[in-house]
Amino acid sequence: MEKVKLKSGTEYTLKKVTRDELDDITDALLGSFNQETGAQATPNKIMTLWFRSCIKDMSEDILIDMSFEERAELFGILQNKYFVGEEKASSSS
Image (cartoon, rainbow, N blue to C red; front, side, top):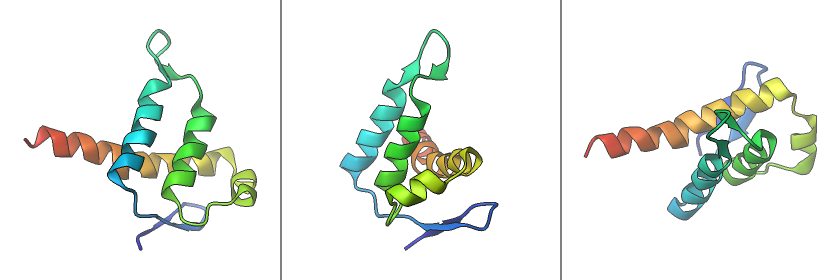
């Protein structure tokens, strides 16, 4: 299984994400985007959803212990892996 490592040195193992799961987390991300302000309406909830969906053995204790910086860094890594990859895949057709 693929692992990701944060600047803090903490490593997480990625789950195999199904197409349906990827659709759910991507739709949640896009659905929480506020068109008027250009910001996420529920950024913390979205990050937690992505972590639970994409990271193996993501527990409540791990989530509570993560700093905001770690959460933001991990979320960016996951977006690049799963969301940006979607744009690349769809633009190649």
